[in-house]
Amino acid sequence: MSRHFLQQTFFLAILIIVTASANLITDIDITWGDGRAKMLDNGNLLQLSLDKFSGSGFQSKQEYLFGWINMQIKLVPGNSAGTVTAYYLSSQGPTHDEIDYEFLGNVSGEPYILHTNIFTQGKGNREQQFYLWFDPRLDFHTYSILWNHQQILFYVDGTPIRVFKNSQGMGVPYPKDQPMRLYSSLWDADDWATRGGLVKTDWTQSPFVASYRKFSSDACVWAGGKSSCSASSGSWWDQSLDADGSRKLKWVREKYMIYDYCRDHARFPQGLPAECSLSP
Ligand SMILES: *[C@@H]1O[C@H](CO)[C@@H](O)[C@H](O)[C@H]1NC(C)=O
Image (cartoon, rainbow, N blue to C red; front, side):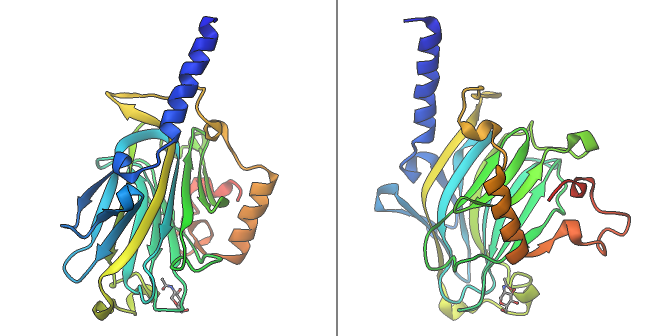
């Protein structure tokens, strides 16, 4: 057996171990909420809850520097107005990087808003907001972050909804040096979340519960100041949108996008941020 073959097999074995993560207990730590966050069904299901006194949250055990992160989430059912379910990657410190999904609840029958943002070197202000093409309270749906050297892609059930391209060439910092951890939390934000804060949380409906399952990460894991990443990582490593992906992204932007900072000329009277000149 050649050394090369052994090496390939070795990488493949690592990849399989990293990719196959069947159980939330092995990957996730509940971090706050004093019993309001629970692992159920032998670690196949995690629930966060929120009541008048506190929300709750969890984080991944690992930190990542680039990766393909997937989680199925079922958002707070019924009247979830005022609640926010956040699901994001973030590094630490004042110049942190962050890739955010925030789900803003609504009264029964009215649509959630999916709010997204990207922070690089501590600076955000890159909001895009969407309605979804389904009611995210009724079923589990997969929310993914693909983060490689060239771009960050947000996918909902495999459909790309947002791209942030590496535009370092234009002087825009890109997250590439700081390892990030996955976080999620459920909390009360009725001062701004629903119709800009007009609709308040109805505490008679509490506890509010969001459910999670099937976490998977095919990622470069950060440990001891190093990322265990190599060119033999999965296809996400150099993935970008193909023609079909671009078509789907366009469909989402045309039909479901409700806010794009890159179109908000009133907000940036000195001119839109540099990365806005890239399509889309
Ligand atoms: C809640 O429903 C109202 C009315 O349909 C809508 O304007 C708003 O965008 C919805 N979502 C949130 C989070 O406010």
